[in-house]
Length: 451
Image (cartoon, rainbow, N blue to C red; front, side, top):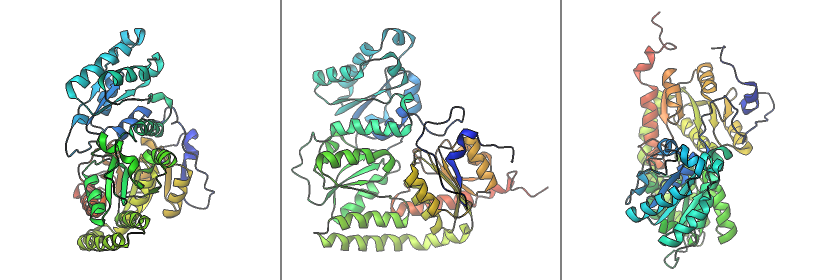
């Protein structure tokens, strides 16, 4: 496959660990023509806000934008499921010429009357930015008339990268924080930021913290509620899981409400345990919290360790490629794969920064490829050259792996099985083992030795 070449403009966003100097270029707009695996600004905002299940989510734009992002997180809810409905103003050619503000006002008021949401988020798409609709003014008018918070989300897709969409979502969320009473909040309390409850992970993580004696005030935004987010300023610590999507909000809350934050990961044994220990360490005045944490970690690890060793016996020496949204997740995946005896030959992300890629460089073995904002041809090239046995990614990466005869593990928005927490590590190992050891791969062209 030497015929697969890298675009010249992309060369500085790819690094192969070895003797050459490390100078990754990142955090830039995708190269035109490279068919980036990234999503747009609007999509970035949707994946953050969508799991707030008792809010109305209205996409102001053409119907395709709403269709593209419907159910994009697949986030589970323990109650309301208004977020599972996708609403759009369905802008057409006539609206582009005459403006869509009237249509937006009518859609908002009708939907609020029908569904009685606790709040509403209105997402601006590319076309809205081009025609100049004053979405903020419409939101203010409807908020005054209907008596619920209505937030514009300035997420026009052409404004930047998916990471800019995260910021737009955080800006909208920040306007909701501070609107609730905090009388019932414990001195040992946290908010969980960047956990989206795709496969029920938020419930697993909340249970861990509650067993430690910690009150979870709000989860932003998995199984999220408007009321809980509104009083999240009363928590004593913010625990940031998906650092790429939520660090901006954590910093804003630190500045305004003096709430410190820590970065954690809930994937893999080491990082899951560290996430619990870091929170326990923050509340030093309550030493019993640390004791409960140690007991919890001991029990959970002992429950899953024998089965992990069984999977490791089959997976030892296998090679994995990782391409995910945030680099922080890649750190945990590399550690988790090491627990299974596997090596990482490619590690990449859509939204990593220079510090993230430096960490990846240190974690990976010589010869491993580190890539920022990859495209399908680049992923195909390195999967073949490195002879990977496994690709970990999302729905857009799945066909690449399968077409090349590579096992695949979905670690993104669309999965239904929880991969966070200690039980999540066992689920992850089970899924990796099933796909990597599947007998079907012996019939793929690169594995078939029959000729």
